[in-house]
Length: 116
Image (tube, rainbow, N blue to C red):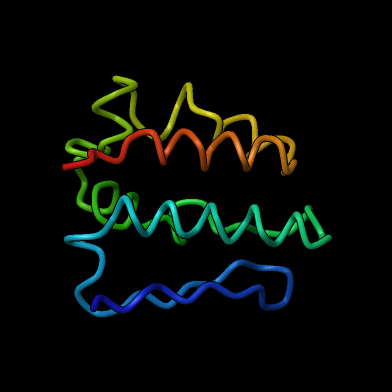
């Protein structure tokens, strides 16, 4: 069984520990896990105005954005046709930090999962 990433809020900042080989084969699942953590955190009454880490805590960004390819191959970029999660619910969340926008981003990412 694959180890899961560990998300925590430390000093008003979202942090993550990625299992060693996780990002290559599980980037979409890791990003979904991040947004599930954020949704659960906000539902539990967590402070919305914290640093959510942006690309530093996003498995898809770790896999596709830090390579210098500007998101080429990322499932989000492939569907939307724009890099850096433009035109996704992430843009709204980045401005509002609201539960509703976090849930919209989670739902969007879940819609990208290909079932076999």
